[in-house]
Amino acid sequence: MKPQNLCIRRFLLGIGVILITFGCGPILPFAGPLDLGLVRLPPGFQIAIFAEDLPGARIMAFSPSGILLVSLTQEGSIMALVDPNRTGRATRSYAFLKGLNRPHGLAFRGEDLYVAETGRVLRFAGAEAALHAGRPMQPSQAVTVVSDLPSGGMHFTRTIAFGPNQDLFISVGSDCNVCEERDQKRAAVLRLPADGNRAEVYASGLRNAVGLRINPQDGKLWTTENGRDRLGDNLPPDEINIITGPGNYGWPYCYGNNVPDPEYNDPARCCDKIPAALALPAHNAPLGLGFYQGDKFPDEYRNNLFVALHGSWNRRVPDGYKVVRVRVEEGKPVRWENFATGWLQGGRAWGRPVDVLSGPDGALYVSDDSAGVIYSITYGE
Image (cartoon, rainbow, N blue to C red; front, side, top):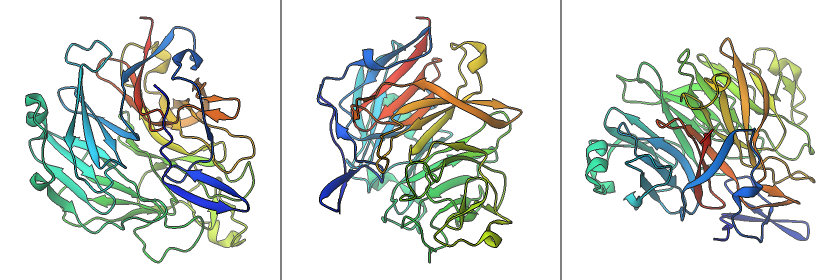
């Protein structure tokens, strides 16, 4: 199987054309076959294909009974991937939902599935029973729980996560590279209280917090953050942020450790902003993130964070296209290191990791929207 180029926008820059996938692109497509032998992992780890033929595979979620769902944003569908005997390979895949408007984020609350489209969040009651029966659901069965999200724009994907008290968090990216947004719900994380009916801004100054995940150790919300473009190869850093309550995280006025952005060059605006919890390399486009909760990896990996770096588009030397491990100590990220690399070969990428999810079988699952597959990473098998 040859990897697919799933870019969605074309921008003419100078005399060349840059291909961008969800805001992060121009890497030349790798011409060879899908070769997992190119992926480098620490000793003892193996990688395999869990499911394939998933064009544009993005965000994943496990149902309560362990069925893996993945959003195919450009296809407008949610795929169900069934592996009842936990063989490490999906034995059946089918479109559980079709006809959605750019679905991205997925989350379960009890037996109900929540899906974030570009402009709203839907709830599908009884999704677990339908999955158990192998029965697709229809968009008409949905109840709209948030109807007024800013839709479309430069960053059009929406990601969701439930907090410990069942508040629903929703990330909404900016509509520009660097600007002062008119709509305060952009460049923000919104919160829908468990007993509420309206989502309000919870954290602002987040240019594009694609990844949302609750740290199971303390219940705090962690996000990835994609920094602005066109400040050179190494600025600004991409970020990991911890959202501990209402606050502003700096964009567009500052980045990283409250460094003023040259577009505004106003240090006074950065004095009260919340700095990044951890800096990542610039333009690596961190997307999904997940805490390892299984018992199959060595003990030192438990509760560590894994982050998918989707890959650069505006660096002279491409970077990213890998999964990194973030060591967590006392509830804080302290440093990152490479975990799974090799999707970038000689300036060409044959895969682009998007999301990372700890599975009930102890494996780590990684979606790839370029190769159109989901990988499983295991240890010692």
